[in-house]
Amino acid sequence: MPAFVLTLAIGTTAIFGASFALYKTAAGPNYEAWPYVEIRIATILDETLDTAQPTAQATDTQTPAEHGDITTSTAHEQQHDTNAVTHSTAEYGIEDDNAYKVKLSHDETLYSTIDNGITVPRRNKEQTVFSAYKAPLFEALKTRAYKGTVSLVMVDYGLSDKITAQAARAFKDLHITYALSPYALTPQEKIDSARKNGHEVWLTLPLQAKHFPWNETGPMTLLIKSKANENRRRLIWLLSLAKGYTGLMDVQDSYFTTSESELNSLFSALYEHGVAYITSDDTDAEVIESMARGAKVPFSQNNLWLTKTGRMDELDKNLKALEKMATEQIDQSSVTAFFPAYPNVIARIAQWADQSAKQQGIIFVPASYNMSEYK
Image (cartoon, rainbow, N blue to C red; front, side, top):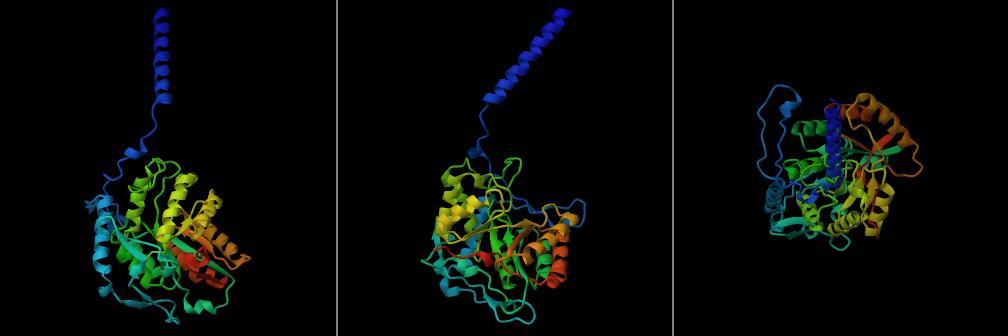
């Protein structure tokens, strides 16, 4: 019996030792082989927000790369011909302000066609899409007395038509900045709809998260371990989705921003395409800003997440903090605050803006308010 126990103990130890050795010597995950392009994006029906009953779901049968090509092709067919530019306009702003109109046509000198018909923004001397699509202030705000300015940014814009419609109603009289999800369907339509109501639109740039691959940001994420031309291809796909956006922004803690070489490549490309950048990463914001300035890319950062989880107690606490930050600003810069596209969050922020913020003398400005081109 003792011999049997001894043999069992030796065997167990040997198996554990061999397993540990394999774990320590095994190759790391092959990021380059990550099957992003093969992932298909499913569209969640808005009915699922209202009921827990099973519903048939519509599925986008195109891969992200194919969807990007189709979107780009549609936008290209509709808008690239300078002789057939759309001239629709829309008044926007608060009731006593109709001084501004939004032209949904585009300056084609700010775009170029590359890679078999893909249309992307480009720098045209001193003219850029950043300067072209920055939302102007509502006329009444230029003379209204105020104590502080706030830039509200709603992330994941466009993923749900129902929530998009709710936000349009809730924020129709406010400067709200939308961070359009790169996986939203009909991105051009959603950008045009927001801009007609005076809202500024940015594209969300999916970057490798700090706990990747457990924390995912979708099939077209830029990865540190990817080859440079693969990250470039994914960036081109993003830039070609639509026209009318001001720049790109990351909306979660990123591991990608810890790599100076990757950031250098990214900002070099952003300068070439004439777009600005906003980061939500407060841990490396100073480094990112320094690199953006070096590349002459207009830059700003998020100052506060109002909530990431949708908890009302957290939201209310941070709205109070936002009031304090805005009214105690020494300079004229605005405080930028991100929030997710949750129905209860949208409703609460709209109520706060109409009541408490107004009483505190806070006005709302686009996210580009603090930003300018570096010369």
